[in-house]
Length: 70
Image (cartoon, rainbow, N blue to C red; front, top):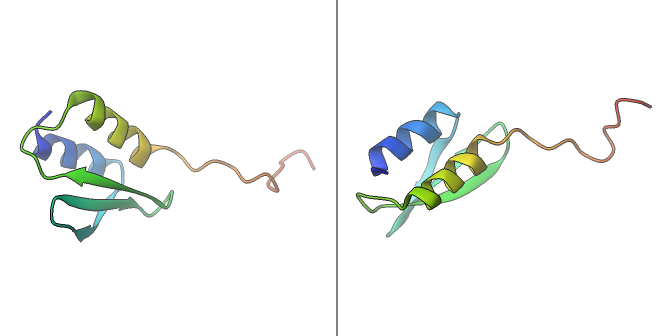
């Protein structure tokens, strides 16, 4: 997957650029609090790209104390 397509996908999921590194950029989804490194290669391995998208687009998991039945 091209890096620009990966960036478009994660930004569409709500992630924002947090900081630039030397070899990776860090993106964070403010809604979930999840941060993930995105490599600066022109081409990103398809499996890695899908994993990054999945992690940054994942909905927040409910806390153990948030039991709707009680």
